[in-house]
Length: 265
Image (cartoon, rainbow, N blue to C red; front, side):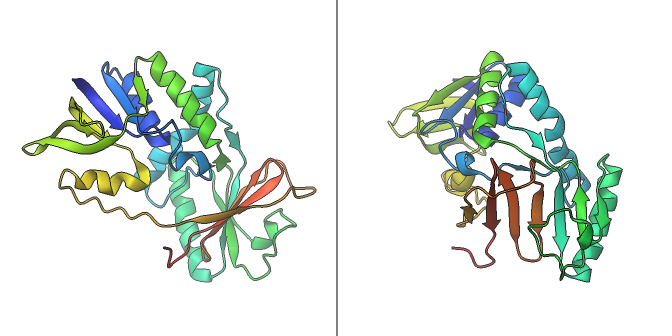
């Protein structure tokens, strides 16, 4: 019997475990089917974006600016957290109007975004002659996803969380309208008061074992890592081209370029 079971040992599962334990939960177990970060966390982009389109999402995302440095201080482990700043690019006037609205929202949440001319983006590597403007977000940052997970795991264990690797959950157990635990691939069962699904791209399938339709669809997302780029600014700011669904970020003197395809597999 476990008080709280968390399925998934990636960034979300370990973060939930850490925060629950820090808030006083005394019986928390993380179940990871392989090893920590072996799902999507190990190759996540690692972009820390505190500014979002709504106040509630911004309030939630902005917590990272305090949590990540505090986690490093608590564990003595690096998370790779670096405040790089970022620029959100607008090719169209309508997009620039949206950025003005988002900037105003960010100011109400304690951030310092401001809309600037595209020519004021200080990156010679980019041709922004056809852009209408940009939003500068000084609080944008980078993180190393694997290092972050290891720090979360250390802190969670220090607060009494159990982390079990090599334990595959086959399905959720239910008792009437509530989830009562999990059945494992080896046919054993673990009863629990609460179960948290933190299995990323596989969460929809896990929820379906309890008859819950989770509105989540996994799609392929491709990114490219360049060879080292001479004279690349360090740190290199996070770049988002919102009208093309493209992001760029620096990574040890290289560039990571990712795209979100409108018709992805």
